[in-house]
Image 1 (tube, rainbow, N blue to C red):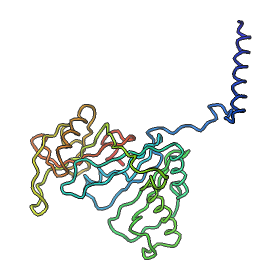
Image 2 (cartoon, rainbow, N blue to C red):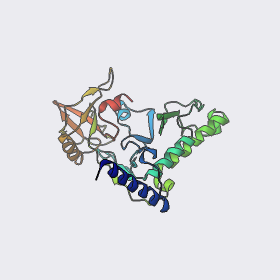
Image 3 (cartoon, rainbow, N blue to C red):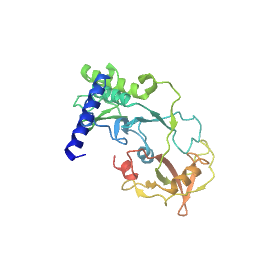
Image 4 (cartoon, rainbow, N blue to C red):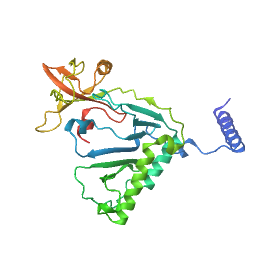
Length: 291
């Protein structure tokens, strides 16, 4: 077969496939015409919190309320037992969404005004956190941060009617993403525990608890990188170390036998450690210290 005849045969075969697809109700669009898939580890929708009255360690370790990634993983905080001391690790759960469900949430966030320059007002409330919404757009991630969203939701908050209406849209969005099974019409119980491949350990010098709160817990040898790690800021005794590789399994095994009040020993000192699983778009402590 000559090159020319081979080309004609290939062209005829391609034409046959396009016609067959059209007859079957399929699309004859070329792959390049299809919408680009989202980056699997890129944030499609996120709701997290900034500020408020927290210790430096708790502020660094604070987790988003929900993060939806490009591949449909929705990472949420599961129930926490109302006991003291609490568990050493947070209860993170993963719910798998379809591409269409991710798009639905992205559209809903955009419709709520995320990423737009909307006047949300500044209510006269002290020490409240700000709620930060992030949504993926064609131009990249867009955010909207609103102070005291839950604390200033009524007419007595000193806000205008337009500001309250704009905040109400964001409150509705927060409610929707806080209960994804109901919002998306999915059956409950499909969540799976989040398997972290890296951890951040936020350490502060250990102080024994007041006897009225609880008794001193047995000390546990810290199996990860030396504490306290990178300083959280000038004048603070709080530090952060990133746990990766083989150390992750060692720390997780030790955390399974510890609790939130456990004193960890490292470098001849005792430390209180807040363990924070790193999410798919996070690499190390710098992502938490610089956000």
